[in-house]
Image (cartoon, rainbow, N blue to C red; front, side, top):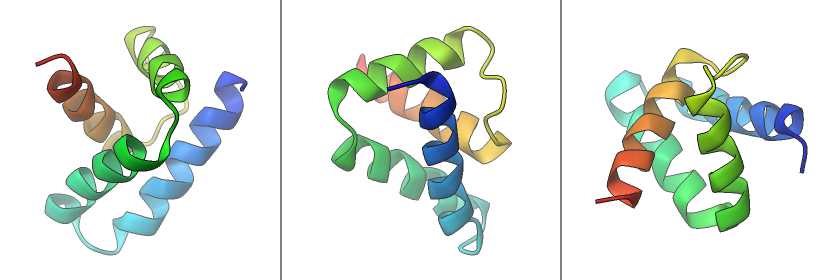
Length: 73
């Protein structure tokens, strides 16, 4: 799957959770990506995040960074 498609999908998830406020959105985004994305998709979006995360909304970036830390803990 292309990075552009993953960025689009991650931002769509972020848009859904945005109405819940920052404190609920971050864990909601991270949980959704953890539960429903294939490990290869997560690996690709983490690589994109490591390369600067261009195009990712701020809440999505934060959620991915949080998820990445817990995935490697």
